[in-house]
Image (cartoon, rainbow, N blue to C red):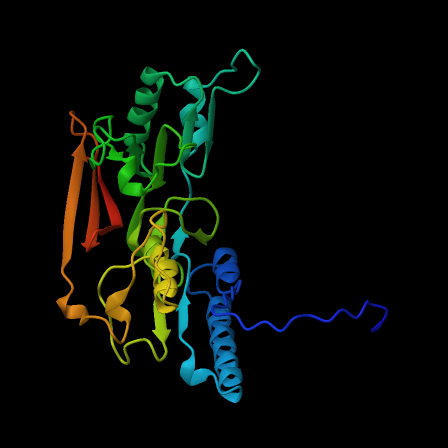
Length: 303
């Protein structure tokens, strides 16, 4: 027994990959805003923590043999107030025979539980003419098409909204590139102080910095990528082929043995969908590298 606890011999662990998640600057940015002094302080301490990790690796003789990847799960924008979604949906709301609500909504997803097509179209019509609503997504007009089945909407395929429990309608809050309270660009029509979750480039784009023996040194790689690419890349570095069921691609252009980033062909594209009456249009900007296509942002137009 040690200090009243059972002394159990633990096996020595020497993992190939270690994932460390730090809650800041996420918490401070949500609570105080993008660019707030406390967010700057959080970044300072985050940098100090990374320095401490590298110092430990160096003391253990492992720094020169370790690849370090630093990223975030999203960007950030300042919130300027959300649309009253309950009020927008109220004309279509009622209680079903089983006592549950006909329409359930959350995080931009709108479920019409009885699946009435006319109601779904009417909800989309209302969203499209409401200021503060950004890109609207519905099921694909045809598989793989960027156009949604309802005029003026983008396909779920553009947003990778293809899981079995997907709602019939998905929408993103609208955004601007205007500066927020602390001078940093990027606002979105959401509640609270600051956050993410829209198709704004300020929310979608996030940093990725990496250093190590298997990585190019001093290189800035402009080839599009996503967090979903990290898993197959880490597997590749360990000599393991990613299963076909895994999304993402290997970031070969970032690896020391990989191609020059300037030699990677990157295709950019835009898909614009408009209502027949011209009251609303939405454009999705995408970029592609190899077989991978990434949503960069959307832009909404209203007269």
